[in-house]
Amino acid sequence: QVQLQQSGPRLVKPSHTLSLTCAISGDSVSSNSVAWNWIRQSPSRGLEWLGRTYYRSRWYHEYAGSVKSRITINPDTAENQFSLQLNSVTPEDTAVYYCARDGFCSNFACSFDYWGQGILVTVSS
Amino acid sequence: DIQMTQFPFTLSASVGDRVTITCRASQSISNWLAWYQQKPGKAPKVLIYKASSLVSGVPSRFSGSGSGTDFTLSISSLQPDDFATYYCQQYNSYSRNFGQGTKVEIK
Image (cartoon, rainbow over all chains, first blue to last red; front, top):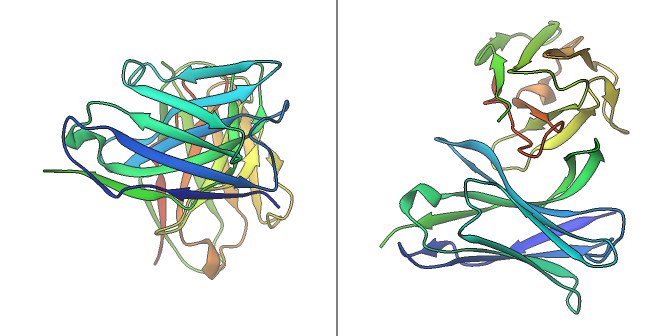
């Protein structure tokens, strides 16, 4: 059974960097058949896919256009986890952040079959 | 970007009712659509993928249909555990957009 456990600060100051980690059990961040995503949810923006990382002989990273200039998603193979960093945050980045695994896929994208528990991150001074 | 529009926004129903939720894509997504159920304080849970395929372990009272731009999620006989918010999500394109959600409330 795949489980994703999220951790990280709940409060981030404006212009600072939001950092979260998602620890994986029951699967591997280096798996050749799945990818690992970050998604956020807020009343104003709804559910929004932010990006993913995956391994296919080398590491790949894909990011949503809305955050592409500010986001980094990195795998940590030693700890079997992956992380999210979002730079230069504003109050508009206040949201519940989820990590999730790719589920069923088309040729272009995937749904999400396993999710972390979610962390509410508030951007405020 | 493909936009996903769900309706109704809120649905009031009683235990035992048949309910139907609609999701419309701004352009064709073939059948690359998933449905999720979300309860307060919890992560979304996938119910249906590829528009009509039921995820293992999901009760058979849930069903999905549609292709192209118009899709529906139906619950044949609403149970107390089904009161929640439901989201559609397209995975035909890079953006992977979600609908804005439909809240199913107790009548």
